[in-house]
Every structure is written in C-alpha cells, then in structure tokens.
Length: 191
Image 1 (cartoon, rainbow, N blue to C red):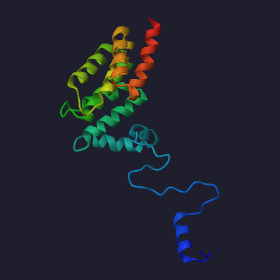
Image 2: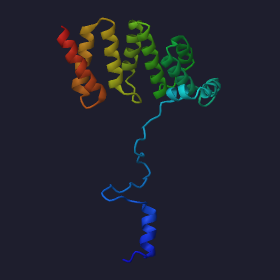
Image 3: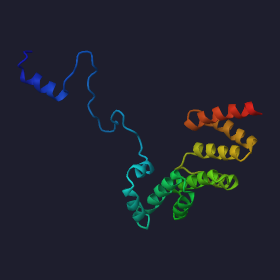
Image 4: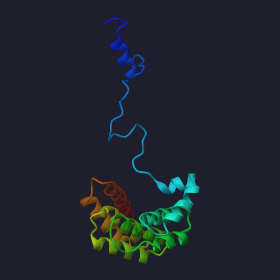
C-alpha cells in the first residue's frame, strides 16, 4: 500500500492517531460504559453540587408520576446532610403500597436514620418487617446485613454474630457476605 492510498488515509482518520507502542483506541460500543464511567448515579450528591435542582425535586414531590422517587431522593439528600427531621418528613410521604424497590429503599433509609438517632429497636423492627416480606425487588443480603449492624450497635452481639455467620455462609459471593465475614471474625474475637 502506498502512503498516498486514499483507503489507508480514510482508515487512519477513522481510527485516529496512534503512537508507537500504545494500545489501540477502543471504539464506543452500545451497552459498554466508557472508561472511567460510574455505573449508577447518585442524585443526592448531584444535589450538593447543583442546589438549584432541590427546588425542582421539591416541586416533583408534591404529587404526580415521579413524586415517590422525588420524595426518596429528597429524603436521601436530607439524611446525607444530617437533617433527619426533614428526611423523615419526606419518607412519611411515600405510601406503603406498592411494595416495590422504592418502598423498600425508603424503609431502609428510615431504619438508617433511626440507627443514627440510636433508636435501634425501631430500626430492628423495620428490618425484621422487610425480612418477613421477602421482597423480590430488594436484596435480602443487604437487609440481613443492616439488621445485623443494628443488632450489633444495639448491644445484641449474639444475634448480630448469628446473622453475620448466616450471611457469610449463604451469601459468600456478595459484597455483604464478604463484609459479614469480616465483622463476624471481629465479633468472634471480642467474645
């Protein structure tokens, strides 16, 4: 191929410049995230950088199609800033039905705010209720792990150790299974 070959120039233009010894440039592919792309967004962090979106979410939370999600996002934002009273007010607006992912996320957040207030018995009751519901739309290992943490912080070390051990054996390939194994070994050493 001669340097003046128009096909070669066209291919090089599409491919872009390549330095000797460098890896070829990856072509964007649908379904594959770009390098450095975060999976999942964290809207409550977006609210910290763009506070003008707070007013938009508050307007959405008043009712309509996206009100449940808006209330959950606002509750997560206020819980993240430490204002548990505002978080609880938005969590109170989320209806108990349908019991879907949003409902269980709201209940989990409600229990986490109770844990921060050191009201462990109410948080344990919420996690037990979620566990009894056996939701298909919410990860059971996350519920069990948070329940075990509530037991541990509430001084019920035996129950916490039992749940950590259960997580370690039944959910060993998950994040919470791994974290539970670390906490179980730490609790076992404290005995």
